[in-house]
Length: 75
Length: 229
Image 1: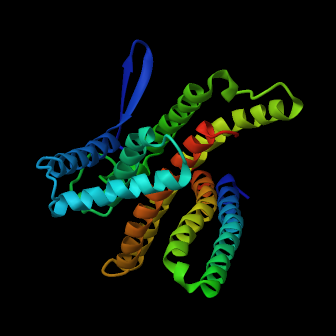
Image 2: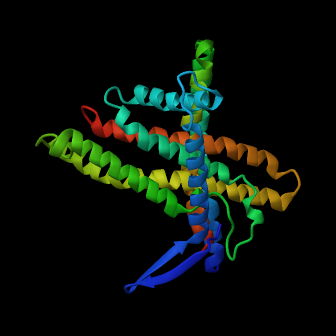
Image 3: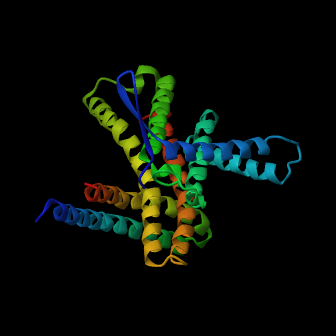
């Protein structure tokens, strides 16, 4: 295969594996939010703020993979 | 995505400026300065609408500082507040229709889609929390005592001095950049209404990323000036 095709393959693999981690992270964060809200419904507003923060932090891992994939494609 | 890079040489060194980033950064700063000037022009004991709104914003910063740094936290508010407001204005600027102004290369979008700007802000945060820790604790900031554990932890902290600004810079840059790529993909699919939900989502992302940058800055300052680290 040529170098460009290999780079495209690598970009696909990078963003795919990165998305696995971020998906797991946001899933766990949602699970925590649901647990907290079903146990104490009055903290829903406060817990949602922390949930957004944690989801943004774990989403960033997929974005690191996205940057790597974009750098691979830009070669 | 691509920038209008102006290259010049000064004393034998090659300097390159991303002109579109500089322009949009100054635009965001001018918006922020005008907002701050208008908001603080007629201060009164009984606040008007604008003053009440700005006092709510300052109350948000002070409340966040109080929850994360227990004591002596008021001195860190200026840096944290200006970082938050600047990132918020810069991210929201990406949704303004500034792209209809054609420039030679690249486009006028949000300035945080350039990694140079976010890396500069991350380095400012690094220098600030290092100097805050050194001013609070002196040389004991680097090495608490001479034991095996603390020497290993000091080496880990030297590693953190690199990884913390790196992750701060890449997180903000990649969020804004990925949003622009998503919008351009949706534009390619159907140019009329397909990008609209993604643009609305980007407004949410602008607020969240500004909050995340501010929270992490406060956490780093708190861990540097706290009792044990």
